[in-house]
Structures are given as C-alpha cells and as structure tokens.
Figure 1 (cartoon, rainbow, N blue to C red):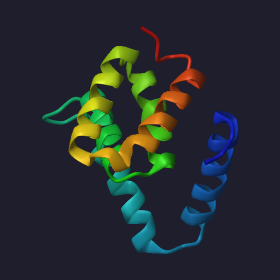
Figure 2 (figure 1 turned 180 degrees about the vertical axis):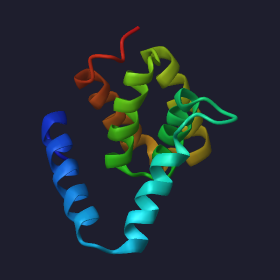
Figure 3 (figure 1 turned 90 degrees about the vertical axis):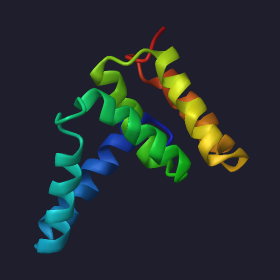
Length: 116
C-alpha cells in the first residue's frame, strides 16, 4: 500500500494510463465496464460506491478500499456512515478482514471528506 494518498493516486493514474495504452481491447472493455457499473442507475452512484467499499473490504483489496473511500468522500458519505458499512464488511468477511478495516480507518484520517 502506498504510504500517502498522493502516492496512491499518482501510481494508480500512471499504471491505468499504461494499461489502457497497451492497446488490448479486452482490458479497455473491462475498465469501461468497471466505470459504468458505478454510474447511477436503479441504484444511485453514491450507494454503489459504498457497496464497492464493502465488497473491496470483504475481498481484502487495500488499493480498492482506498479508492472507494475516496469516492465515498466525493459522493458525500459521512465518516459514521462509512464506518457502519465497514461493520457490514467485517461481519460478512470475518476476522480476516480486521487488518483491512484498520487500514481503511487509517486512510480515512488522510481523506478530508470523510468527517462526522
């Protein structure tokens, strides 16, 4: 996990650019599908970001947790709402997710938009 949010964002942007620039149609399609999945539909995009955070925690992906915490902040979720969602992830994922919940809490300190 990158030490700072700015390091994470820079690395993510650089590698996404390289991946999308490699010319592989399947990868481009997957990235487009991923982007579209979080757009508002029957569920608002705001709700989908919280769902993404829970799924990422259960799947134990720290990069995805960081990304979805950032998106949750941009969508206007409050810290206590995010914590409630992380509780659902903990219940679903079990004790093996505790280190990832810890890192999520640490990231929330860095993300200004996730305040009470």
